[in-house]
Length: 460
Image 1 (cartoon, one colour):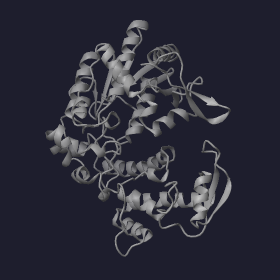
Image 2 (cartoon, one colour):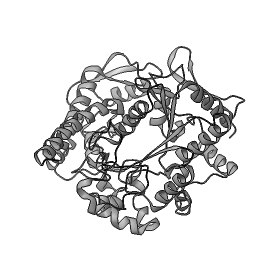
Image 3 (cartoon, helix red, strand yellow):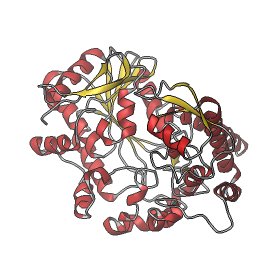
Image 4 (cartoon, helix red, strand yellow):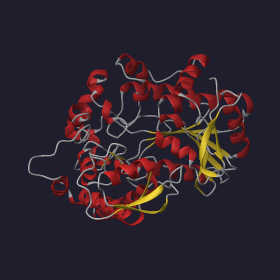
C-alpha cells in the first residue's frame, strides 16, 4: 500500500489526472472513513462476497471499533442465488462473525438481473417465487434474511431491477433510522475498469467536493473510499491484517486466471460470462443447476469466446451484406428485444448524422483518405482534447474494416456485432449506462404493470 491515487481538476478542463502523494492508501482511507463517520448519521456497507467489498467491510469495522465504538453500521448483502459454493460459504462465515456487531440485511428478493447469454431473455430473476423448484440453492435461513415472506423494505417493488433495489435500500435504510444523512459504502476501485474509472472521475453530484461520494436521493449518498486502491493493495491488506476472504480467488488462481479476470458476480452477466465454463471445473455440482436455471447457460459456456457469440472477427454469411444480415438477425428476435435494439440503432444513426461524435485529427484524415463522406460540426465537449465533432453524410457504411485508427464509428457491422454478442445495452456502440438506465426503467415499468395486473387477477 505505497500510494494514494488522488484525482484533481487540471487547468479548468473537464477531466482529472492522477497525482501521487506521500500518503499511502491506507492512511488516505482512514481520513475518508473519519470524514464519513463524522459527517453522516447512518452508515452501511454494501457487501457482495467479493474481495473488495469484503476488505472494505473488515476495514470499516476495525475503524468503527477503534474510533466510533457506539456507531451502528449496517451491512447490505444482495444475494443473486446463482453463485459459486465458495462464495456462499464465505458470506455465511462473514455474517456469523459480524452479526453481533452490525445491523445485517441478507436480501433474497426477486429482482431483474441482466443476462448476456440469451437472445430471448434480457433478464433472469434470482429467487423467483414462481420458479422455486428451479432455485440453485435453498433460501438462507437466518433471522436477518429478507425475502418475500419477511420483507421490511418498503421501497422494494416486485421484480425491480437489481441496481434499483440496491439504491432503494438506501432510501429505506434512511427512513428506518429516523431520517438523517445516509451513506452506502461501496468497494468500487477505479482501476477495475475504464467504466468505473470514468464513474469516479465524472461525478456530477458529489458531496463537499469529494469525487468518491455521489448523491443517489435526497440525503442518501454512495461512497467509494477504496477508489484509488490497486488490486495489489487489496491483497496486501488482507495478508497484513489476516482478514478472511473468499477462497474462490484461490481456485481462480489455480485455474490460471489473472487478477483482472477474477470476478465474483452473477455468472450470466457481461463481466462473468467469459469464465462461465469454469463452473464445470471448479463447482460441477453448481454447474448442473445453472444449466437448468437460465436459458443459454450451456451455450454460453461453450461458445462465449467464439464467433457464435460475436467475439473476435465476424464472418459475413454468403449472399448477405452487413445491413441485410442485421435485418435478418433482428427478425429472428422476440419483439421486445427487436424493438429495444431498433431504438438504440436509430438513436446511434441520428447521433452520427445530426450531432456527430468527437474524433481525433488522425481518424478524420484517414476517413477522408478512404473516401468517407463526412463534415465537421463544431467541437465535442465529451473529449479531453476538444476534438472536432464529425457528422456522416450519405448512406450508413456497411462496414469500416478499412479504417485502422478506430472502431468507434458507425456501420451496419457494428450493429450486427451487438446482436451476435447479446449486447442488449449496445455498450459496444458507445451507449452509456446513464442513458440506458432510463430506457431500462421504462421497460421495467411496463413489465411491472403486466405483472401487477396478473397478480391482481389471481387475487395475489
